[in-house]
Image (cartoon, rainbow, N blue to C red; front, side, top):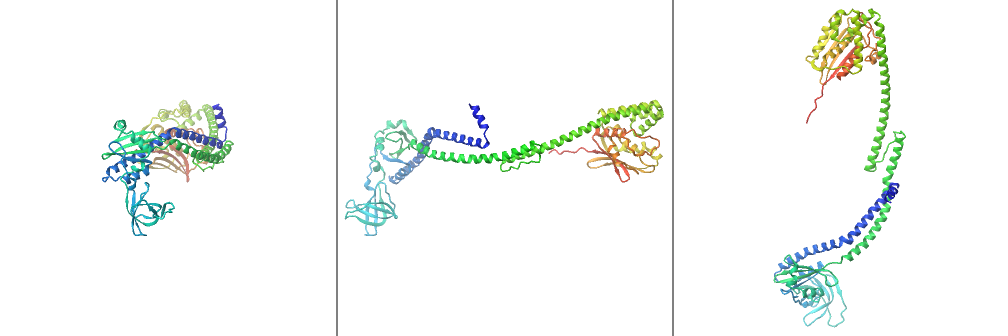
Length: 580
C-alpha cells in the first residue's frame, strides 16, 4: 500500500508534489498543535501563572514588611486589583482581623457652598488628593454624605437619579481621604476566605512550609486556588490566588486556531500551486535544453537564473554541454591523431623495409658500401667509440658493411625506446669549445669563417656522449651543406630561464617542405651537399638527434634565417619553488 502511494506521488508533477508535501506538513503541524494543546499546554500555562504570581507575591510581601505605620490598604488594594487574587490580614492565631468599611471617605472642599464635606466611598473607589470631583450627594448621617452621581477629573464613574430634597450638588477638590489600614472588610463574607481561615492551624500548615511561610493547593468551590500564608510582623497575610480554568482557555484557543488553520489551508492551496509553477517552470525549460543537447545541438543554453538552484542547474547543464562538445571535438581529434599515428607507423615500417632493401642492394657494390660508410661517419651516425677502432680501416669493405648494419640496429633501438641515458653534470662550455678542434681540418679545407660566441663555465646534467653526438651532427650538417668560404657561427648562452646552444651556417636556406620533414627518419631532402667527398645522406642522423634530445626533455628546432640556417637546442633550467 505504501509503495503504491509512493509511486502515485512520484508520478505526479512537481506542482502537485509540492502541494501535497505542504498539506502533509500542515496536517502534521495541526496534529502536533492539537496534542500540545490537550496535554502540554494546561500544565505549561498553569506553571507560567504560578511563576508570574509568585514573583509578584514575593515583591508584595516584601513591600508589606517595609510598612512601619500599619497602613497596608493601598498596597493590598493595588496587589488585589492587579493579580486576580484575594488578600487579607490574619492575626497570630490565624483569625481574620477586623476592618471598618465606614472609614473609607474623603473630605471635599465644595466651591459651591464653600464648606468642607465628608463623603463616604464605596469599597472599590479610592481618590487622590487634588482630584476634581463633581457630582450629587445625599446625607448618610449628620456628619457624612454619599455620592449618587460622581464625575472625577471630568470622567463619569456612575450616575443615579436622586429625588430626595436633601440631595445637593457638589463641585470641588479632594483635600484629604480617610481609608482603613487593611482590605479585610471587603472579603469578610468571601466563601473561599472563610473556608481557608476556618481550617488554618499550626498542625494543618506544618506539611506546607514554603520559604518563610506556607503554600498549598486548594480546590474548595468551583475554582482551583493556591493559598499563601506569609508573616507580616507578628501577624500574617493570607493570599488566595485563583488559577484560571485551562480547559476553557484550551477550548477558546482551539476554536480560534480552527479558523486560523482553515484560512491557512486555503492560502496554502492557493500559493502551493503558484510555488509549484515557479519551481517547475525553470526545470521544464532546462529539460528542453537537455533534450536539445541529447540531439547534439550544443549551441542550446539554459538561461534560468531566477533562483540559486535554477542558476546552479543552468550552469551545470551549460558546463555539461560545453564539456560534451569539447569531448566530441577531442575525440575527433584523437581519432584523427590515431589515424595519423597509424599512418606514420605504417610509413615507418615501410621506411625500415625500404632501408633494409636499399642497404642490401648497396652491399652488392663494394664501392657504394665504402661511400655510404664514410658518409655515416661524417654525419655522426656511427658511435664515437666505434670510430676510433674503425677509422684506419675506413676503406675496408667488410668493416664498413658492419658499421652500416650497426646503424640499422641503432634505428631500431631508438624506435623501441631502449636508448639508455647515463646522465651526469659536466662542463657544456668545454664540450662546445672542443667542436672547433674536432672539425678544424674540414673548416680549414673548405675555408670557413668559424665564429665562436660561448659563455664560460656553463654546466648541464645530461648524457655527455649522446649530447656530443647531437651537437656534432649539427656541426656536420652545417659544414656539409654550407658553400665554401661561408661563415659558421657557434653560440652558447646562459640566460635567466634557460641555456641555449645554436649553430648558424650562412649562405644557404632550406625549403619549407624540408624543414617540416627534417626530423622524419630516413627522410632525404633535395638540398645540395657542398662536400664533394660525401654522398647523399641516408636520413638517419637528425632523427637520432631528435630522439636523443627528446629523451633528455630538451627543446630543439631548425629554422631559416636571412640567408642562413639555424639549429637550436634549448635546455630549460629547473624552476625554484618558494616554500612559505
